[in-house]
Length: 144
Length: 144
DNA sequence: AAGTTAATTAACCAAATGGTAATATACAAC
DNA sequence: GTTGTATATTACCATTTGGTTAATTAACTT
Image 1: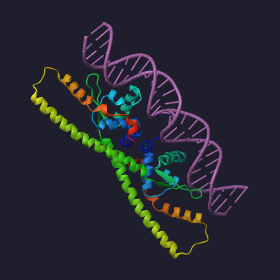
Image 2: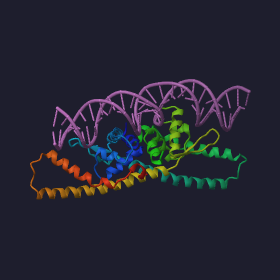
Image 3: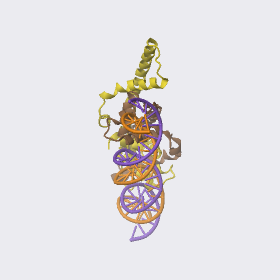
């Protein structure tokens, strides 16, 4: 599986997010991490395994101690995805506003047809959708 | 379930991320969204349901058309969580560097003991862990 | 009414997921 | 060796998750 999916998957659990938050303050042991939760140690161990597999934490070893430490690179990557993505959204919003303005002008030039309001809306949708879609390829393989 | 968990959970799938990316360019129909994927319509419908439940998209309706639209607030929230979290990490790194420097100075003042290197490491771990942990409460309920 | 289009729902599947209880492993202290 | 501490692993459980096929629903056109 890809890095982003494992990262977001790891972040999808509140316990794991809390664990990461704790580790942001510094290295901790498994028992310490388990402390705040009404949960068994094996359950915590499982969560840590998920976080480790996502490279969000690293684990070291000193005798029976297994301190965990935050490794932030995947978070940076995930944050970057969201950040870049939001950029697209803001751009898209600008385009939408311009488009709607043009539409208002066109509407002003052409007198209303006798078509129902619903029919008009459908045409609007069709027009928007026939334009941008054809240039796209397989996103699932190209985005990440 | 909480908002962050559903958002991150939704983002944990590459198909769903690709769908969002597509919607960033503008509203699309279910069939259009399914186009790039080697996947059936019901599968896409399921993914859209997940995205809708996470409030990452909204769906409208025009005759048989069901155009989908991006709703970015949850992304902003998730991005904010990562952003704030990264801040904690940078702070923690500064503290770690200072701490290690102090440790170097202490080591310079005190001649090496005959204890093994492993034992020394353990003491380091113990010292760090007894200090910050006691002020923390239940993170799982407090973080989000 | 019949046919078409667009999408959803139901039923099914294998795999994954958050938990538990029991057990095993690793290490230190006595 | 025994006891205590810290943690991992195994087996189990119910639920959820990404997919499929088949059926159904909703809306439009002829």
